[in-house]
Length: 185
Image 1 (spheres, rainbow, N blue to C red):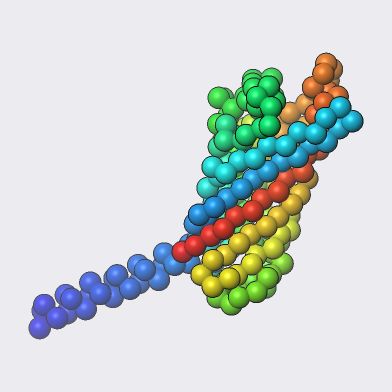
Image 2: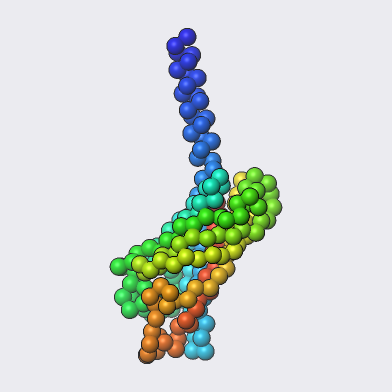
């Protein structure tokens, strides 16, 4: 009898533990891109080393972005990006977003479809944290959840500004950020 109760208790703990972990989705593929355009040149960088999670019950969203993971078309652009005059990626190796889906009741993670999502939270880049509110799309396809968002960031808000020299004319004051992430339980 004791053995049966113990077995039942272990099974119950396993089921409860599994149920709790299925509400947390982890990105299997995350792509962060930024694009800057000026009359002098366009700059685009891509990062596929980003990690992200979404808790489907609470709406909590986290992105951890390794700054040295951005890849550029030109090696000199990448060198400038990582330098201490621009992003100082050795001193500030990660950017981080921690926030929440504010219209969670409008997103059904269990039913195929496309849902508009609003997210609020804190974005930290180069040691500077700003509150942001952005919109995106959550697409449910079977067990796969995709998130897409496109928004603009003003560089000076994160301590990135050039007053003179070539960078002041070659780098836009505002950059377009595109995020595409694919999640699975």
